[in-house]
Image 1 (cartoon, rainbow, N blue to C red):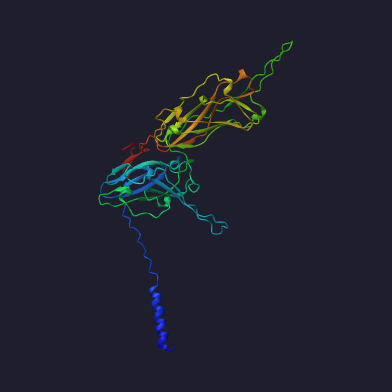
Image 2: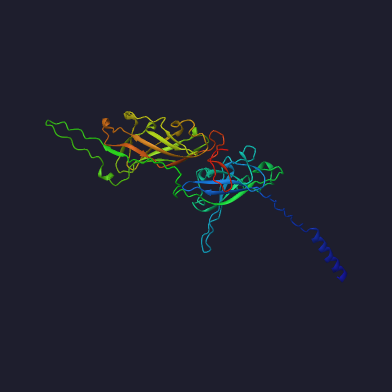
Length: 397
């Protein structure tokens, strides 16, 4: 084969490779986000699970913004693994977003801020995470708090192009600001509260376990009855009965259902009157009000049928709806409710000859109830509008 033939074959191969070459991939430019006229920030409130978040107008003209805590969502990243760790867990971020997170800005609450004005409100971490706070959001750790509609991380898809219906700023020039981010510390509820914070002064009275007196024996000669033992020796070091109530959530307050359980940690059986009429609830609502819920509480002479035997290390339970005890407006606002349940019995069961009876009061530990929608009307939590650098005045603008 001569030189000209080899040259022709080489040229043909080169032309064929050029014809079948993969065209260069077009790189889509990243969208350019406009400069936001508002600044988003948050700081934890001492002794609570709450943040006080704020929107500040940093522009030179009035701005209308979306002022709605439902737009807040949380992203908590796990700590970095040590370089010498033998088993490295897969690092995944935990995301907390409300189930009623708005998809557009049509129905969100709006406020207009002048130059330098700040809008502030409270948001609860337990409400944000639906009563299930992730392990990556431990107290005092740093997390990302987002405000807006850019929830691509939540829905696991690429973010669409900015749309005016997903903007938290209602600007005349059509600029779209769909997400603002702040790095904040997780609130620590174990820290002492500020002096202005309310403290529940109710003590937790210790329940009493009474023993019925033994009847006198029927004999020819009168004998004195044997003395009753108030507290058996086995109970002198054992903890008393405990009232345990689990957290619960529902769309509205009248649908809340909680499981109330009375535990007997003793090694001996215990008799107790077990019916809803011996319960009452103390409710602290998201707005800071306290409700004494005793609508179904009844103290009377109980019949034999309502007495229950609690075996050693056993328990009895029932499911109740706290809304039946409380006024209708008690669970109207959406949010987190801090609740305590109290069991009170004054009957010693002497007429029925029960050996060990639970009398007195048993107060449960505080538990959380979450109302997702409530009455359907948005209620701000301790909202305020103030100038930057001045003391914020509380109120509902």
